[in-house]
Length: 372
Image (cartoon, rainbow, N blue to C red; front, top):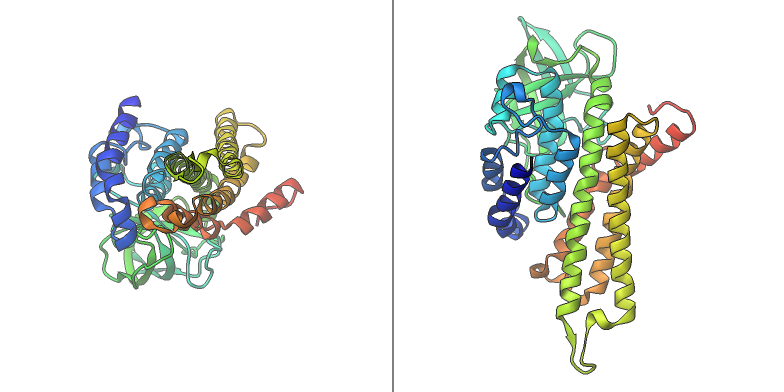
């Protein structure tokens, strides 16, 4: 595993970091970085060794996302969503796709959120209908990371015939009737290709179903949600680590010439920087405890999973806000990189499950109520 992380660091240094500002300014999908990550085996790290993958778990996936997020939020989010989709494909998908992911030749993502239900991913409005031996999918997805850039989509719909709120499908790209509906010109994560998609009479074989008909929500909650929430926390932590370090570099290299002192020698500035470090370390400690809880099968594991994205995401918003204050006018210039982190940090709050939804889930969990 150390070899893969060494390769990851090399790719970050040589490919991801040099293009991060350009990806942000132009909104370009980071294809060069994704190709390099695929060739290095990073995109296949979480597939099984039986199909040629790395056989690694959530802890490694979180570390990959953390390191990428410290350099380029858009690249990190694409990889995060790829790993989230890979969980279901690895557990329920066809062997040829699993082998392609393991070989770094197949990029996937989740397509859950819809126009009609927005961030309430557990209530899809899109339909699945039996048609001439196939299944017809119709839906208007509100936001799909890497839209038009992946090889497949883990797609949600209402059940085909069974009871239950949701069924999941593996939909290849390109497929007739499947289209990207618009472009993405967002506040942050500008290169992650998060745009609406429309399925208008998309035909897939019945064996494109991932898991049982009507069982999609159970699979999403049990298999995808822990990975998504933990990796989202790792994303926020990587971003906080980067902005805290960038703030430190600015404070120690910038001088108040009339005082013959650096900014770091100013007490109030140091206090704010210390608050940033504490918040970053607190979020990192919660992430470590969450992974430990999952690994040990602790009783509080799911509570930690629900907490970790909300806590880290809100901490990242606070830390980047302080960074903008501490670094003053310089932080508003794009070359420092801090305002990019400031913008990217805000995505966690609105990505489903949103922070408010997670707080409600946590409140339900600690009061003995069902999540939904």
